[in-house]
Figure (tube, rainbow, N blue to C red):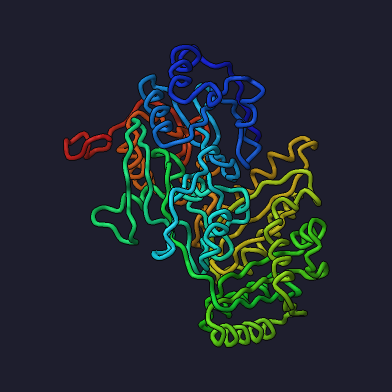
Length: 495
């Protein structure tokens, strides 16, 4: 269901607060024009839109802190925003609040190649870090498909992964420290120059918190050495079940590929229309398998990968003959989401996780659910760690079809939970999957999470309305607060 909100800037933010923000950030860094505000009404989840009352564009940690402090003083909610490529509504504005856009914060604060680390502002792009590190033979391992445009601040907020997270892990495995503005405008430093810091792991709390506990304004990332050798193959299969079995068998054989990506036929068709990357249009599914490491290790694992694919009935194996051909294969895979416009006017993209051993049965069930709903679902995803990205295709011009597509997308995510998985692997919960949190967590689980959030943001002004189910979104029964029996007995307190 499309959610749209449009309000005029409230009196609360239209007067004194605007003047104070202009004084702190400058006239060019404060946006109130209704037309310009529409640029910030949604992120990559375009079905949810809210026009904010104001947008501010700081350039430094001090300017972010000044803006947050003014919001806290006036009791005005704020939402941090990077490049707006998020897919869960995590950067959806609040209609009477402020968007703090970090797109102007693109400075590289320092590169330390000897210790393989770099410190940047949050507006530096994911791919940009690797470009800057390349002269030193280093790179940044997390590689979400939107890496050319998505920013490291957003990667930290969502704990993004990408195709190579199977071997190298998520953003949380590559962030050493952050500078962080708390919801009262204080500036703190979490983590440091080393992988392990003394004391509570507050950095671990912040990474993946979806901007609900404050705003990251500087990030120190860990860099890796470029591997000595890289080998890639594309294996076609006559069914998604065979491809799924191949993934499980590959890992069971003791091979940990850098990446294993799967595309079903709908995804292949879209990618080929957009990029001409050379995927076989008649394949029911294709696996992109990439191995890296030392030369001898790569060759051994590559031979194993080929044998595993053959034993699972591959119909064709393509091995790129040059770096350019390998890059084209990855261009096709990473263009998949954008390419869906070639085969459908609209789509919902979801993000759930299942055990690798259940890839085949779950993909079959998704196809059955799509047939029952009268819709198509394209699948392109990180098969190696079971992180599904089903794309539910629909046409918003047909009455009711958008609602049907959203219901199917939600049902697929909740199927992942029933199968022993999770409602999100890397896209986050945001506004999109808040209602599904109750399918995965108990009321006690959610209460503990809320208390952690309240410890950082007691006034609830930092990216409100995200992650946790609310009566407005999820149809919970409203009513007066009912204390827990332990609270009534004086054993515990209310956060």
